[in-house]
Amino acid sequence: MSAIVLAQDAVKTVNNAGLAAIGYGLAAIGPGIGVGLIFSSVINGTARQPEARGVLLSLAWTTFAIVEVLALLGFVVYFLASNA
Image 1 (spheres, rainbow, N blue to C red):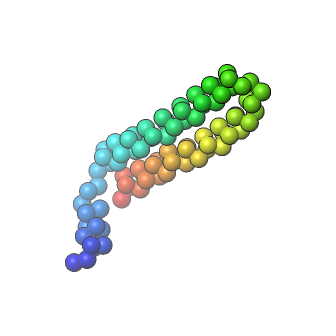
Image 2: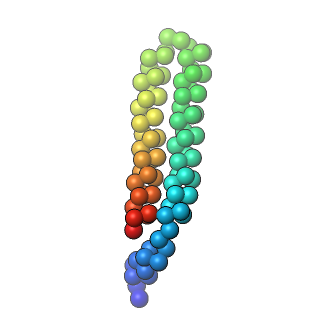
Image 3: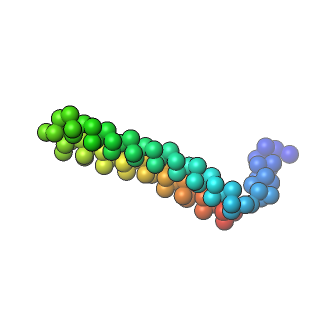
């Protein structure tokens, strides 16, 4: 048997929605911490240099969107794993 066939058999036998939910919860920790760090840096930067507020906020929203894509990717993988 090839490794691909063994992997497909393993996916078919492990079909637990609870494990998928735990996996998504763990995957959401990283983006949650990332968003907190992004906006705390904006607050610190604005406090140090108030005239840079606009630049910092535009950069923060851009990086926020990039980080949230990771959370959405985990959400999609959760549904794929729970409905397999």
